[in-house]
Length: 399
Image (cartoon, rainbow, N blue to C red; front, side):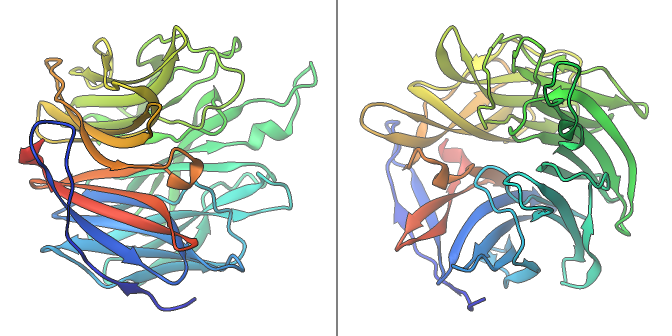
């Protein structure tokens, strides 16, 4: 792989509110293609992983932190030439104490969607703890991906993923069995423990989302009923027992295929916020719902979009009662990456347009995190015949 060159620049853009919003852009300029970002805020820093690849599909999984207003040096945590690289099913990571756990996907056979989930565990200093170990140990040549990882305080990691081990079999009608969602814990030594299936029928290719509350882990995902209703569901682990999944809201969206548009769950103590894309009464929408009961029930959805919703949501708590949500929407003029502030009492701010954005798959799933008073957003753009990352930050007091 070629060496990287990184430059910083400042850019002022204008929001669609009455105030001018100063947005600081951190440009990533590389010789190779760079995409599939994952952004995490933890313990006083924002961390970023992404894949860089060349024309021969040699790939690096890279890691950096933004600390004290500067990016740390890039660390390469994994290298491969047999990876499954996809705009929607991208590597994720989390930081627990002085460790970082990263995921990435490797082809297991010649089929388009036959791949496995691999993990690497390092110290933040770069020291290797356990490298290149497989998460799904079922041995089936099937799809395994759409990973979500969160730190379990400083005691390792919690991980959820879509698992296609059952899809290689057919039911009595000759149809392939549905995708499942599974959960496991990863210890500080890299051991996989407490693996369990959470739901035996879920949407095939929507991102999963996981958070860790005072009472335990919560997983949110797009379900799939026998009638092809694909609404957002939540399941909680209470007292070491996983509860039966319930809908965040009964949207009743019937769709005979995967919309490739997963939810996002975030938590502050035992308050949850879930943002998601849906289609209700034929109208695309981005919704957000709060739960003040650790996910046992949710308030009525708050509509976020003003234009035609595209989704690809992310969210982060600004404080105990307010969330920043990012989303994509468009009209006849173009497509926009926007953010709004949403309060638990139902108040919604005017949108801020972060950028005009391509509506295609090449944009990926924009990532959002908050560190202190700064909001960080990163997404993929096509620049000079390569995919590149665009990262911006703005002051949350301006939202």
